[in-house]
Amino acid sequence: MSCRQTQELLDAYIDKELDVVNTLEFERHLSECSGCRAMYDQYQQVHDSVKSQLSYFQAPAQLENRIHAQLRSAARDRDAVVQKEWFPHWRSWAMATAVAVVLTLGTLVFKRSQQFSGTQLLADEIVSSHVRSLMANHLVDVPSSDQHTVKPWFNGKLDFAPVVKDLSERGYPLTGGRLDYIDNHSVAALVYKHRQHTINLFLWPSSGADSGPHNLTIKGYHVVYGTRSHMIYWVVSDLNAADLGEFVREVEK
Amino acid sequence: MPDQSWNKGASKGVRQVSPDLFERSVLPYLNSAYNLARWLTRNEHDAEDIVQEAILRALRSFDTFIPGRDARAWLLTIVRNCCRTWLRKNRSSQAAVQLDDNMQAPIGALPDPETILIKSADSRQIREAMEELPFEYREILVLRELEELSYKEIAQVAEIPLGTVMSRLSRARRELYARLSATRGEMQR
Image (cartoon, rainbow over all chains, first blue to last red; front, side, top):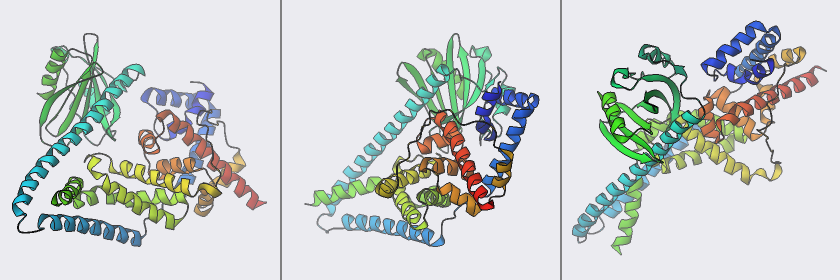
């Protein structure tokens, strides 16, 4: 790593945002170059000093009160609307019941369609992440076929411990793992191979019940997702659906 | 026509979210929301109005929020967008600053005497220097130095590519340090 590269990566290093390889190279350069080391020390000190003096503005108590009042009144308005419309007249009671049934069904359908569009967005995000991982040559942060290397690597990087399985005997050798960011949170991405095909397995915790596996096809990629033992999993690959289904069964075991 | 009132009820009903869930998911981040709004608007009254508006917007769109997601980043994105809208309305007096994120981040060491000056700056001086910075610089500094968001989270909240986060953050810090050393230098003279 050159002095110039070191200087360019200075902020990312201070913020602990460099990947393992660049971190090691950065540190090796510092140990060999006294100029860059001095620059780093100075920059880090200035950074820490300014950061520690940067004010954090706490929300005033009156704002908190106003917001609680606002939420209460929003809830009251809603209850009022519901009450007024549920008990308009005795005579429309029968009709009310009928409409309520229709409404409930409508709401269910609406919720389902919402859920579906949420899933669709998530699926697009997963496939994009899969494609990105292949294109940017950033498939793995921790290249290892050993589950006992990959699993501990996630310690401290995630607030959960992903299950890392060795499936090489089943024909799906582990290639490594990386941190990814899906649906607004950090997730574990495990990378497996099957023949020449790459499989990305995304994992993050869920409070929901078991579901799936559900199958989707997006832009030619096969996508399988579901929830098992409070873990959401998404699997994506260009592998054929049958082999990918086999892989999912192994993962779910 | 009873039908119409029922339809109204229907749209309300669909939007209905559990107020408890909303309060539990979102209100813990009220300080984060206020802090960001306060830095971006540079005054407390506007910050309070913006946070109130943002909380209402969050409540209205809470049905698109999936539990388990990062509620803080989600709320901060809404706050940030409210601040931008506010800024556009109140911009008349302020010249828009064009940022060039494609430019190479400034590099090189800070001169020693300046370093000492910056390190002796107190929080009022730092706040004044911060408030002179363009919106985008203040935003990224607050998200990183105070909220300690990761680059990926910053990219989401500020709606910029990940690659831009690093260069913009680097520029923002250098700009802040440069202003600090300039004002501190003047005071000493």
